[in-house]
Length: 476
Image (cartoon, rainbow, N blue to C red; front, top):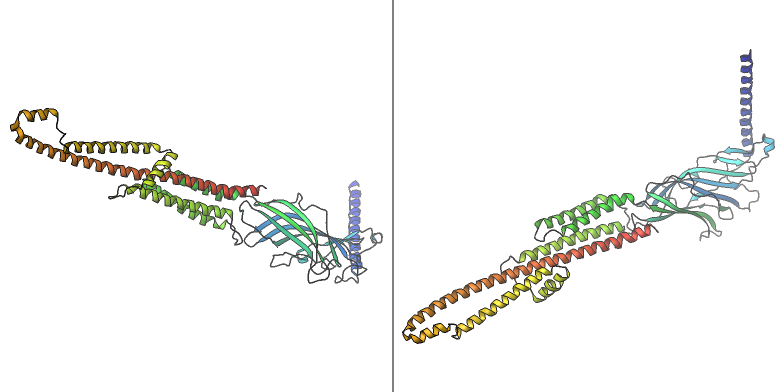
């Protein structure tokens, strides 16, 4: 019995709810038919045609879909909010079961033709055709239209400081046909970025502001109103730092340590050529990652070109050092000019900390000069007859018959002296050749040290002059 009573009550409640819901739906249908009767969407919904319709316009940024730096376009997903007063769609809610709002298809009523002025979408004009939601119509005539949409707008992108660049893009909305006398566009007070925003993996949205402009064009007597949304984007450079910049710095360090190899090492020039080819191949591989824009050249591309030039400089200097080093082994090698010896083997050698070689060379030159002076004195004494000792002169006076023996002995000494002179000249020639070889080898070592410091200063200057200013600009 109790079960039967409960079942009857449940049926009665369900029937009541169904009846009230059907009654409400029926009431809304009648209300929509009532307010749309004799309504035309072709004319502005104002009683006085001289009155302007105030349209409050605003957007909420949901996601940055893509920044196309090659085609100069920005694709964003936003929520569009529009609110205006439709004076022809009002009713007394008390006469319609307290209904204060209804949802109406946007194609059945008048809507403001607010479009994106800098639209870059080839399929849509950036206007009301993007909005597929229904309009909320209130009994006091207020119309509220909230619609999600995806816009592709033009954006002038400067890639000079890539990948530490900062871009500023604009979304300019306004009426395309109505001037300020027909539609007065106002900006709403709601924020552009809320907790609904989904961050991009490549860009940070660091600033968003909205501005209202009243612009008078040459075509029309009355000004037009637009709402412009300025978006400041900051690229996240982590991907490019680890995949583009870091490998390049590793290659530069390899060239740097290549200078520590001996100048006469043949592997040094092979290493330099290999590194130069590696830089060229790596630049080719990352060309897809670099933005393509003829308006400006990315500083990263300039940095890579600088690295290639510095690697080529290292290769050229290595060839010069090897040529000078092995010039000493050539026959008939020309002696080193005095100014080269004075500047490179004197000033530069001491400045670069290789003065030990120069001191040894000065000692060898001093010994050579002393030997030459002694040989000249020796020959002069023999030619003047003072070469023989006093004992030999006394022996010749006490034995006059020894003249023949003296002549024979003198001839033997003359032969011996000529042989000694030949040996001395050979030793002096060998010593001079060795000295000349040491000069050229020392010059090669000094030039190698000079080129090393020039390479180091060039690399550090290019890195500081290119990457550091870009990094500072990136961080404001």
